Image (cartoon, rainbow, N blue to C red):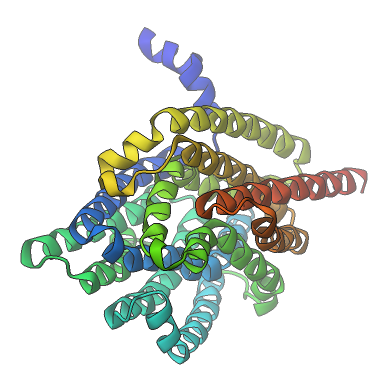
Amino acid sequence: MERGKILKNGVLGRLIDRLPHGTISIGGGLLINGVTAYIFITISSRDLGAEAYSPVALLWAMSFLLGIGFFLPLEQETSRIVASRISRGEGVGPVVRLAGQLGATLAGVLLVASIVASRWFTDEFFNGETILFIGLLLVVTGLGAAHLVKGTLAGLGRFNSYARYVIGEGIGRLLLVIGVVIFTTKNIGAYGLAIGLAPFIGIATATYKQKEVFTSGPKAKIGDLSRALGSLLVASVATALVLNASPLAVQLLANDQQIDESGKFLNALLVARVPLFFFQAVQAALLPRLSGLVGQEKFSELWKELKRLLALVIGLGAVAVLFMALLGPHIVVLAFGEEFRVSSGDMALLSCSSAGLMIALSLTQALIAFKSQGRMASAWVIGVGVFPAAILIAPNDLFLRVEIALIITVFTTSLLMFVLLMRTLQKTSSS
């Protein structure tokens, strides 16, 4: 008992107290998902080698760019509206049904566009591997449904079920890749199918025995979702570009002697972004919490919680930069092999950009809670515009120029977010 009090009142207790409710549950799921994801990457890297692994790495990056980029707004708006209705004691069934219809429409548009551009995707990024393109289509469909499920669960406060999704996705992907290793070797397409099918396993795991989701309530108007969805969609695509464009930029900037560099860069980026990966737990729990505070007009409490979270993020980000500078290259080699080695400077710069992204994503949730989606979107769009401009002025070193451009981009976006949030808070307080 005494030990429990010490933990609760000690440093660990104070850190946990800074986190939104639900973070620990989702964080536990992400821990399992993260471990399985890195095992998947390790197995595929070592089985295929740096050159053959690169198109699989690009599918991995595109899964976040297309899936999260286009469907995260659906999760965010569903979570916000569901949480707001729950705080008022209203049923959420009409919201979930309407969100499902919008999500299906968006998925259909993306699938048609992808099929039209199939030859370009296959030749430019997948080295002619058609099965990798099929994996991309599965990713679009699966992640579209997954973000609807996650947004509903987060808005309902069912964070344990949310965690079950990320656990099911991670373990499902790992089981599929174990099957690949057992029954075949150096099969690039099989790894693509494992990436594409994993979200469906996560959905089945999360929705098993879910009850009282489609509760009756006031009719949901399409304007409730679509009014902000346009701004969120622009912001989300821009966010996904900032998060995932760097490996694609390496691929496009590489010369004929650097054909395997995009795979090396992505693996280094994945190691440097371990803190950002687990920050998803904070992000998923933060928006419903802040939306509830805005709905109750508790603006001073919202700012207090956000300041505490930002202080924690900045502190942990600084520690992560030092850690990655010292041990990051060794972790990359241990996980993926000597041919994936990068420098300490690369790891420090990539970790620094990850810290900036955590700051920007925290401020993003606050602006969404205030229904300032348009302002938030403008900050991310400006950030996307900064990235190619920064690449042009950076040194003519493949990795360094992309890393510097990424740092300039994320901290420019964070600064704009902070200014916009301060104006929003000032306007709200004076009204």
